[in-house]
Length: 192
Ligand SMILES: Cc1cc2nc3c(=O)[nH]c(=O)nc-3n(C[C@H](O)[C@H](O)[C@H](O)COP(=O)(O)O)c2cc1C
Image (cartoon, rainbow, N blue to C red; front, side):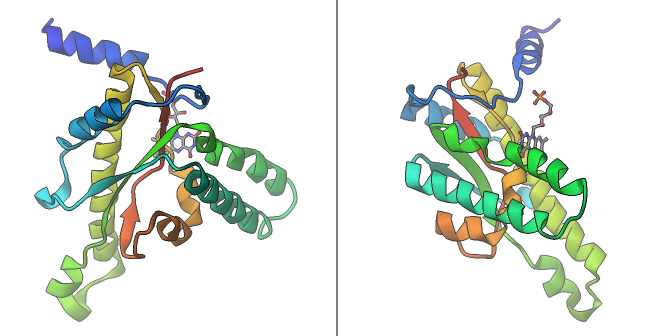
C-alpha cells in the first residue's frame, strides 16, 4: 500500500468530531496558518478563488455568535408544538458548544448570480438552487481539509452547520455583507 494512502487513511480513521476543548491552551497562529494553507488547496466550483476563511479568536465575537444561534434556535422552538419542543431544544444544544473553542474557522464566499445573468427571466428556482448548492458543496471541500489538517496537527475540530440557522445575523457579527454565504462554523482547539 502506498505510504501516503496509509497516512491519509490513518488520519481519517483517527479524526472524530471534537466538542470539548482545552480553554487554557490557545491554538498557535502557526497552526492556524497551516490549516489555512491546507484549505487553500480545496477544489471549488468553477475554479473560483474568491472564497475565504474567517479566523475568529475574539471571545466577545464568539459569545455574540453563540447568543444569536441560541436566539435563532429558540425562535424556531416557539413555532413548534408538543414533544417537538424539548426534542428540538436538546438537539439545538449541539449548535452552540463552539463557544468553548479557542478559535473558530468559518469558510465563506460571495453568492454568485451567474445563472440569473445568463438566463434572466428564464432562470428557474431549481437552477438557482443548483448554483447555490455548488457553492455550499465547494465550501464543504474547504471544511473537510480544515478537519483533516486539524487532526494532523493534534487538534480537535467539528464541522458545524447547526449555527447557520441564525442566518445573516452571523454575517453581521463577522462584518460580512448579506451576499456572503457561510459554509460552516468550525471550532478548533486542543482536545479535552
Ligand atoms: C454538514 C455537517 C453539519 C454538521 N453540523 C453539526 C453541528 O451543528 N453540531 C454538531 O455537534 N455536529 C455537527 N456535525 C458533526 C456530525 O454530527 C458528525 O460528523 C457525525 O456525527 C459523525 O461523527 P464523527 O465526525 O465523529 O465521525 C456536522 C457534520 C456535517 C457533515
